Image (cartoon, rainbow, N blue to C red; front, side, top):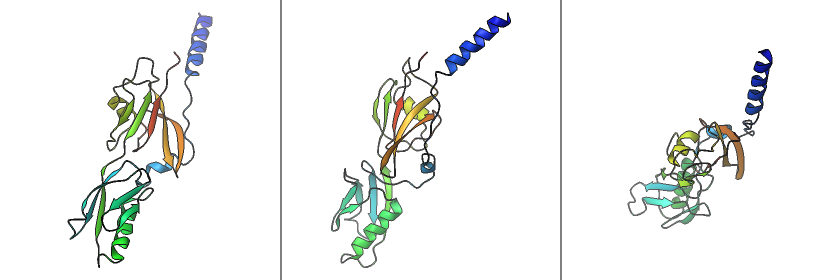
Length: 185
């Protein structure tokens, strides 16, 4: 009887060893508390107080710029909304307005991507407070062969793509790429 228990425990240990370990590189967790930085694909609501013709919805283009009337293309990629407000105010103060006051808010975040063992892989609109699990649900759920306990996330940190293996309760940020791997058993 004890030999049978030993073989069962050995088999269980072998199966559990097949699951890849979670791996989070340095700096990956720190990005969760950092202020949101703008990038290509974000849509912004920019309000210039007292200037209705300048206030509108603007997209951050592929080169990370926002193009406003009068001042033209303004770098926005990698900036927070507060930093962009100050940059636009400085440009408007340069010969256009005396005391410009600008407000910038994210109207629509850039999309995230889900690949791998999900029902419908693709690009999806970001929703606040999203986790890997909710992102997978938006993608139609797991496929029958999916590894359901963890996923790989790739995100831009410091202008470079960084990948990590995380649990499905891990928070997702706009622009992340989530890959659900196939389980072995």
